Amino acid sequence: MSSQPPARRTVLRGAALAGAAGLGVAACGGDGDGEASATPTAPVDLGSPDEVPADGTKIYREDRVLVTQVGEGRYKAFSAVCTHRNCVLNGVRDGRVTCSCHGSEFDARTGKVLQGPAVAPLPPVPVRTDGGRLIVGPEA
Image (cartoon, rainbow, N blue to C red; front, top):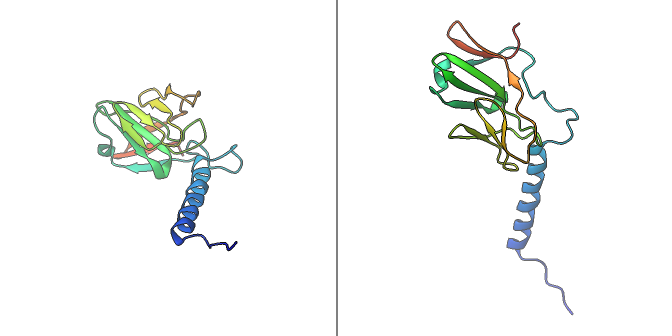
């Protein structure tokens, strides 16, 4: 019996799946060992408060926070790190913030879990405006 080498397409498909699986593990975090804090440990300037829509929410993925304008010029902020497996949240729709890793959903105004698998709410983050800038995290 002769053995045929795998087709190029089969090899490429396997490599792509292995790479995607590896990315999923990295994106979802782990047990918290050596991971960045879920909330800012120093003040973070997010820019103009106008970036957050009236009665809406904006996720600042690179800063791992989300900000909701709960009234004219009034803001609430929460960690944008899912409390299930540490993925950064990535979607906002109808006041619900979603995690694409495992489907958890949170209320953008309260941080409460609306749909699991997450069971813990999003941690609140101090937020304020200062000199026309939106600042999250502890005061300096």
